Each structure stands twice: as structure tokens, then as C-alpha cells.
Length: 256
Image (cartoon, rainbow, N blue to C red; front, side):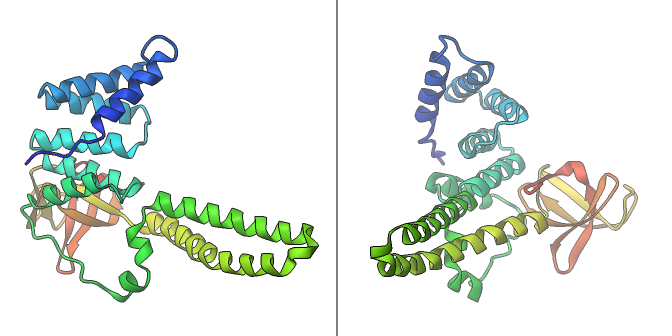
């Protein structure tokens, strides 16, 4: 399967332009260019290391996460690949290439993926699931600004108060929708403790000890929900009847 990487050339151009403004490449620019060079020459492990160094430096970028996921998938590290694809999806859930690669990576998961059947909320609140959180926030800010601008114009222009009032009422509808959705998205992130299994195989046990009863086994890329923390251990749930303890180090949390 050929990974879709249409952003690669654009990002190379962007990195070069950022570096050329001062006549030399910044350390982060150089790391990114090194990652691109490694990736294109088939040195995927080195590419992942270079991209990860940028993440460790505090860079938050959906396309960086996307390319990091590609590099991990190339070295058959499914857990980290899905983890970084999912983090990229949180930032940009509308990227078709990202969704394509994520869908392929998910098809490699050994554990059964619990499908989400269409529910009423997904039908009536479709925009929440179609738009990324960033897009929703931008729309909320845009419509909110437009709403208050129309009210200001109505107060200043006496001759066109009625048309401006009608326009403000019309704009108030999407303003309310997207503002409420953005607030709910923020609440959802704070309450949603989802993680991805990173190693190839993890034993989920009844307690903290390695001698505790093994309840079941999960594999790389499987999504779990964190229920409780106890020191360096997490109680996770995979399904209603599959709950147990694992080490915190074996999962990558999607929300912080």
C-alpha cells in the first residue's frame, strides 16, 4: 500500500522558505529537512526520529503528526502510527489523505474494532462529526464577530435598522450552533480519556503485579478508555466486559 503524502513537497518548500528568510536553516527547519531526506531515501526509522524531535520541541502541527505516522507505519510500528494519525485527526479531521492512511492502519489492528452505529446525535448534529475542532472554533469566532458587527451597524445606521436586525437574527442561528458546539468540544476533550495501545502485545491484568491474573490481551493500535489512575498504572476498558490494569507507559494518550 502506497502511503499518501501529498503534503511532503509543500512542507519542504515551506521549510526552505522559512530558513531562507535569514539565509540559514533554523534548527527545527533542519530537523524537518533531515526527516524528509531520510523518508525519501527509505530510512524511515531515522525520519521518525527527526520528526519526533520536532514534536518534543513543542511543535503542534497536524501535517507533522501525519508524516510521523507515515514513518512509523513504514517501520511496521502500528501502535505509534495510529497514535500519531489519531492526534493529527484531532487537529484536522477533514484531511482525505490522513483519513485514508488511518483507515488502512486500522485495518491492520488484530483486535476487533467496535463499530459505531449511526445514532440520532450523529444525524441531527452531523456538523460536529464532519468538521474538525479547529474549523468549528474558527466558524464560531467568525459568526460571532459578524453578529456583533451587524448589531453595531444597526446602532449606528438609523436608516437601515430593520434589514440589519433581520440579518443579525439570521446570523445568530449559526453563531449559536457553532459557539455551543465549540464549547461542547472543549468539554468533551477534558472528559474524554482515550488512549492507544503502543506495543505489539499487552497483557491486561486484574491488578498491578506482573503475577496478577491475565484477563485478556490487547494489541498495537487498539483504542481503550482510561477509567482510573493509580501510580504508574491505569485501569482501562476495552469493552463493557473487558476491564483491567496496564502500565501507563504502554499507551499513548490522545487527550491531555
